[in-house]
Image (cartoon, rainbow, N blue to C red; front, side, top):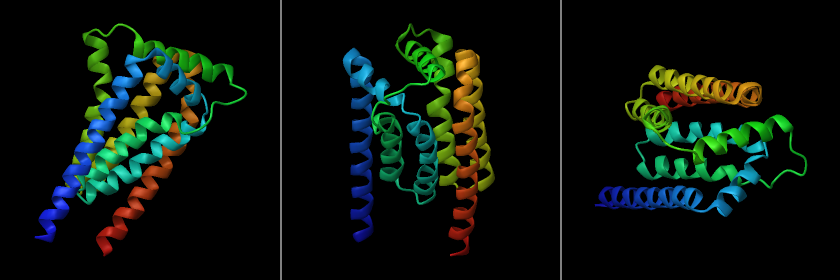
Length: 190
């Protein structure tokens, strides 16, 4: 009986976080004022270092088979863009890159852009699947793919300004792989 209650609670929280995630995306794309407010705070590169680290709890919750944890982490990833205050001084390369990123997100959406952008939710689903099935090496492979794809996309679409993503992505990749590998070993020991 208690197990059924916990599963219902997990599912209810997952649905709540899913609805909040959709509401955030609709608000961001539906309001130019809100989008500008979010991107002003996204210029704080601290969020660039923090956001990829959410892959660690995402993997943990997938391993624990908690839908609430998975959807809560996805909500945290999206909203972490604006957790930090807008910086007083903005690196010109960061400003150039984020202008490109914002134009990419708010521009016309053709089939190619939809296909390319769908790699984000598909790769996150692949990561969740890997750890749901408790496959460490598949999961690490997906994490490496995510980091490599982000770096390639950033440089391909952002040019020189896209290189500003490389340090946060590489540092996060190393930290995530190390933490997940150690956590996986510890969970399997217990």
